[in-house]
Length: 82
Image (cartoon, rainbow, N blue to C red; front, side):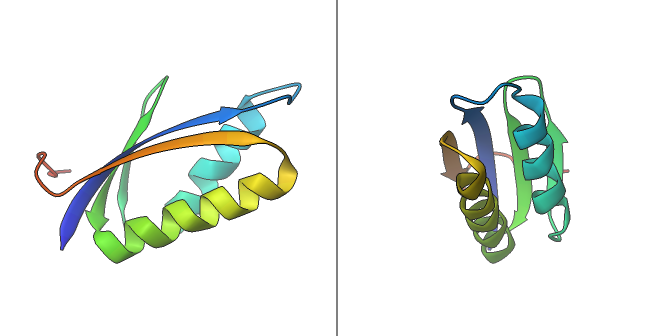
C-alpha cells in the first residue's frame, strides 16, 4: 500500500538542531521512499512498510543521542504522487 507521512523533528536540549535533522534525513534516504524536505517538516511517500521502517529507525537512532519530539502524521488518503 502506498502512503504518505508528514514528519517534524524537534531535538530537545541539544546545542544545535541541524545535526539531528540531517541524521534523520540520512537514515530515511536509505529507504526506497521519496522525501520532500521542508523548513519545518518533510513529506515521505512510498510503500507503507518502507515508511514505517524508516520512521522507526530514525526515531530509535535519534533517541540514542538525546531527547527528541518526533511528530508523524500518516495518510493513505492524501495525494501521494512524487
